Length: 200
Image (cartoon, rainbow, N blue to C red; front, side, top):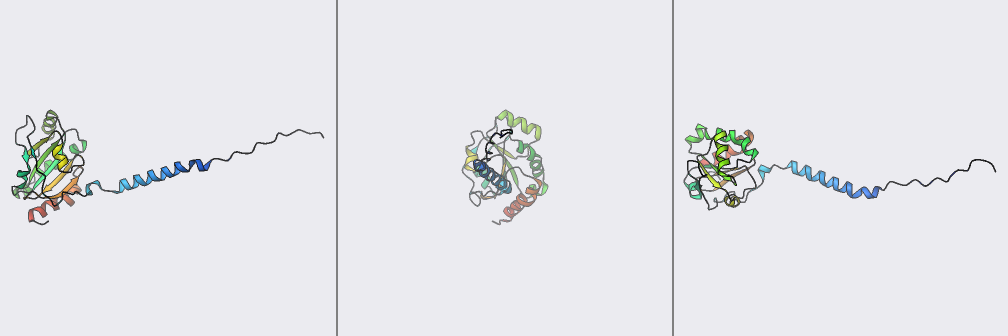
């Protein structure tokens, strides 16, 4: 029998879809994680210290900077106080700083006796002094927390954070992350007003 002999064709290899199953599962889990992470508002994380007295602490002033540090006793002297945790190396702290200057210059808050204190977190004194010289000093008092121990006692997650403290030393509100115009209007100012009126 004449003719061209044909080579038997090798069976086509099937793509191993099952081998990709773990990769698909990992991708789905990663996507879910990213969606859930983006959906939360970090500033709304609950703080176990809300409604409780400020922790016991004493912070010295920043070396080479005029003024006094502060302690828990200063937060129980009858004035509503904002305690802002900041550092010169913190980029979001620099972003919120103009709003802190605005708060410090607010005549209505000044008339109500509202004070703004700074808790300088894990910072070199020279760097803190340079930052405040460049950006301005909104704080009536600044305490240096170089080892970060006081911030731990305050339950600080990271910088910046801002606390509204009632005149009796009770923590009324905690802002996690930088202050924005929206958080100032919608959260911090209502917390200050409630603290001034004695509401919980």
